[in-house]
Image (cartoon, rainbow, N blue to C red; front, top):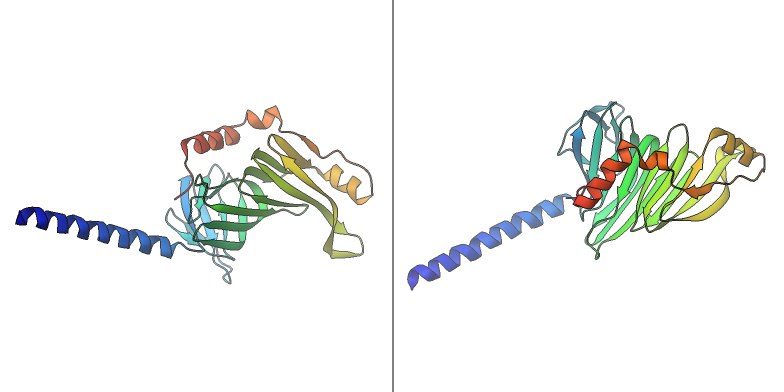
Length: 238
């Protein structure tokens, strides 16, 4: 009988130790993003420091930090509650806002170049708030899955739920300011895409059809297929 009690006490103690370290690890990831280098290489830049340094799996990013991927590389940024941001090859983002605590994952990014795929946590109790900014787009979402591109075109594509896209151009009276041209809701399966001609026409007050269905060319690409397989597998979060 005494041996049963001892075994029971050992079990309780082991559970308490595991719970302690899980709680400690979770606390250490509050308001941070964990880096996972899937393939290739990446570099990160700490806020206030000009020099880029090698980013490894397990590296931690804070608000104000930046990260960029090398050609042929892919990286995942995981938030506390399981939401994730995936970076494609030759992509650079700056984390302008990062709040991940309790049951909320909130992140704001400047997408300087490349492609990102943002995925909400699979936990329905988590409130995920995403914001991605390019020179001519501001994308806001609450608990969705979507992709943003800043390359030859600036685009946002919605894979789940819906987002709000704000289209803006440089103000002619002040090059340091932008003016909003249009704000639109973009639903599942839709995209907003801006090319240089579109931006020029918008600046000149011309009407441009920006909203369309996500193209077959994009769906046929390796970037789309990889992200969809990761989403189906439930990967991308802590």
